[in-house]
Amino acid sequence: MKCTFYGVCGSYPSINSLASVKHTACVSVETNDFLLIFDAGSGIINLGRSLSNPNKPIFIVFSHFHYDHIIGLPYFSPLYNSQYNIAFIYPNSDHLKTVLPKIFDSDFFPVSLSDLPNSPTIQDLSFCNQFGFSLTPYNLNHPGGCFGYRLSVNNKSVIYATDNQLTSDNQALFSSLFNDCNLLIHDCYFFEESQAEHKSWGHTFLPDLLSLALTSKIKHLCLFHLKPDIDQDYIDAMNTYINSTIKHNQSSLLATVSYDGFSLDL
Picture 1 (tube, one colour):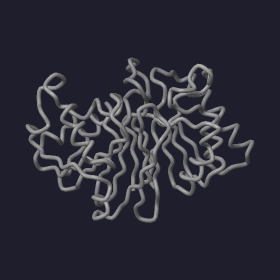
Picture 2 (picture 1 turned 90 degrees about the vertical axis):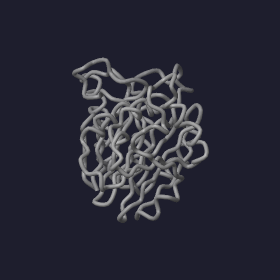
Picture 3 (picture 1 turned 45 degrees about the vertical axis):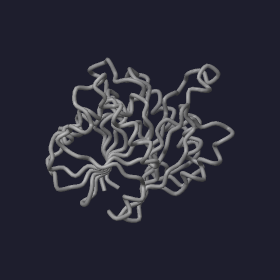
Picture 4 (picture 1 turned 120 degrees about the vertical axis):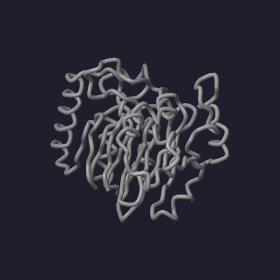
């Protein structure tokens, strides 16, 4: 099972063409049997260009429908190839059926959902069970609502928790929900910024995220949904803080500040 990050920043794509944190949310998990894609931010465009096997089913799983998580969907090239087998996945499939046509509405895009050469299906989470994996949804702490997911396949688990704000009130809850996973992909939009100024933004600060990861059975933490346009100095400062905190706690936790193109085998 291979996990690849095609877009790791939040809000909008980076205007810095040299940045390693460039595109918005899109992460793939691929096995021999399927390709699962979390979110369809601008990163999904490059993902689509990389695909060459129409025989492998594709599942696109949405966390929520803010622009940075859907903006790349109309440009996902397999949607224009009828040979691909594509399913859109969301806990409430009826709601998904109302949202998707709006993304392809003529006011925003010239090709309607019904006119796509591919005919993707719209499914709820139970659809996944027949393909040998399961998705367990979590309600995250984000304005307007957002779902996180635990993907369970081949006795391994990946948790995708974008757009989630950890607080003193919910830390214990999320620590319990995220416990015992091989990989936690979690929002880390803030580092040194003032918490008082951003307390209701629905995004997590690095110290809070590390605290959760160190108190849960998490093998690998990937910091995700990063602030756009951060530079290498900012990333280096994050890594210094992460490494010193892990060392201070004498923990075996692996932690990575994700970037476009980063991948790991599970």
